[in-house]
Length: 185
Image 1 (spheres, helix red, strand yellow):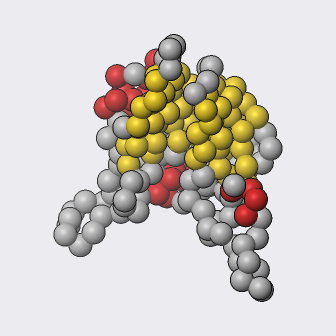
Image 2 (cartoon, rainbow, N blue to C red):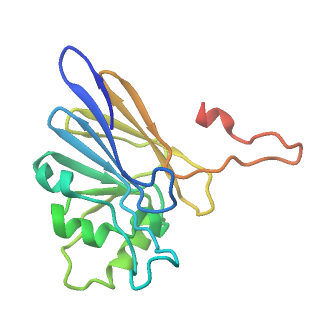
Image 3 (cartoon, rainbow, N blue to C red):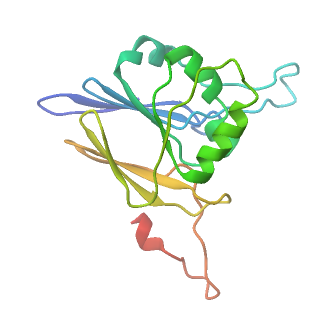
């Protein structure tokens, strides 16, 4: 956990998965009484774990602090970023999910596999959109990735901005120069 403190409140950045591994992407940003969840992915097992279909992030912290959850931001539609949503909402309720049009469609398609699950509340966002969740302002920006319609999130806090790109790749032009690198700097 990374924690920075001011006179008022600390800000906590808590990775619940996806650090030095492929899969289980989920990060929590907490400021005061507000929690924002970034991605909710699953991890596929390796050969050494026969009989396990998938692994999801440990959500105990979120379960005990679910009254603070203001929203779930999904960066893109790969299963390592959306796959745990059906399991997560059964444990923490159904926070509003903010994501792009394509990712929303992928989440809803996956949700068809869970007909008895809670209803999802999904608000579409796009590059340039701004929203406020609790005391935090969020802005969305375009991300190049292997899947279309991926977004990054800038979370504005009194202690500085937190930039969450999700997964990304830097595109290279014919002259081997980065394309749109200014978006990331």
